[in-house]
Amino acid sequence: MEGLSFLTAGLTAITWQMVLMWLIGAVLIWLAVKKDFEPALLLPMGFGAILVNLPLSGVIGDNGIIRWLFEKGISVSEAFPLLLFIGIGAMIDFGPLLSNPRMLLFGGAAQFGIFFTVCMAVLLGFPLKDAMATGVIGAADGPTSILVSQVLKSNYIGPIAVAAYSYMALVPIIQPAAIRLVTTKHERMIRMPYNPQSVSKTTKILFPIIVTMIAGLVAPDSVALVGFLMFGNLIRECGKLESLSQTAQGPLANLITILLGITIAFQMRADVFVKPGTLVVMVLGLVAFIFDTIGGVLFAKVLNLFLPHNKKVNPMVGGAGISAFPMSARVIQKMALKEDNQNHILMHAVGANVAGQIGSVVAGGIILNLARMWGMM
Amino acid sequence: MGNLLNWNFLTAFTSVVGEVKNADITKSFELMGKGMLGIFVVMLLIYLVIVLLNRFTGSNKEK
View (cartoon, each protein chain N blue to C red):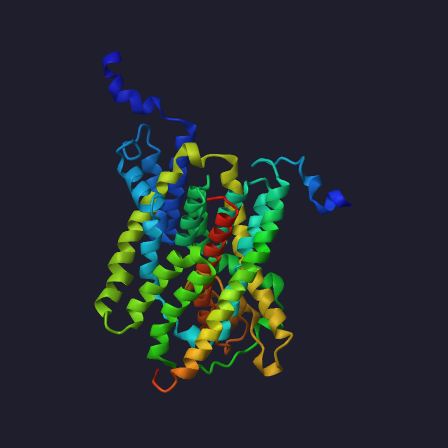
């Protein structure tokens, strides 16, 4: 029988942690397929979680493909999340924001959950770098969460990626509950007339260039994130590169998404994933999303104290200032219609939502800036 | 009182994740203050740029 041990080496190397990771992988695949929760990311991550947790798995050995993809695509250069940003930038129409720029303020306020969560994580005993990486789940932006946690060399890259994408899929459940907690029915019924200014093509072309320069000058570590996002947007708006724009939005984004999901599974190995802190990170991710929403809503309520009666903002629009685009804007519009079937605030919410895209990458960059100043990287 | 202000009452606390450190608590609050300030500074600058762009490029409009 000993001669057949080469056939049983895998079986005898199974640990309960590996089995747990198979189950987690299966749950992620189930959420993707049955519940339609961010299937493009959760399915590759779920399959990857199973793949890397097979005993003696060849994909994570010294020459393993997933190890190689992780090292080259994420660890060394953060190439995958950044390349995905080109696609995201090409998908975003900043028009609703450019015609109604005050929505930018909500894209800033709704990043509050990030910093609140960092404080909570530290109070729970996380080292500061892990707390900062965990807080960035509140950016509601998977690539930013992955990039910041990787640059900070967090011990929780896997759980952070899973939390970021899972909660993004749960925005339709999380945001209405958080918004109802801090608003009255009367506030949710506030109507906002939409009188957009027309936006020139020159503005649309100059916007991504100038935003990159501002972000780069104020928060230099955000320049990779903002720069790639805005590069994608410039390709879209210049009017001369339609084919490249379509490629960035479609094939490039799809290709990177496939690879990013399965590559991040490298950080879902049982030995690095199964630890008490993982569960705490998942809970803190939820806290981050809730306090992002509450931060945006409360900011709108404070703003309303200073605005004339006919210019009041529906506080729910503040909650749309997170980066989960366009899901958050849709959720807000649905809530508004539920309270008043003639209340159309979608375009305001879209403006706040795309502002949240900018806010989240700037927040990630500022966190990296401060980490660098504090000698953490 | 001085100890309370320095958050020293937390030094002895160790959670399931690890030891709660005074220095990290102070830095996390500093991060919150500087982070939110930084974001609003960037957002206000971008706001200003959009207003200026809309004003000076207004002659060549498209829907």
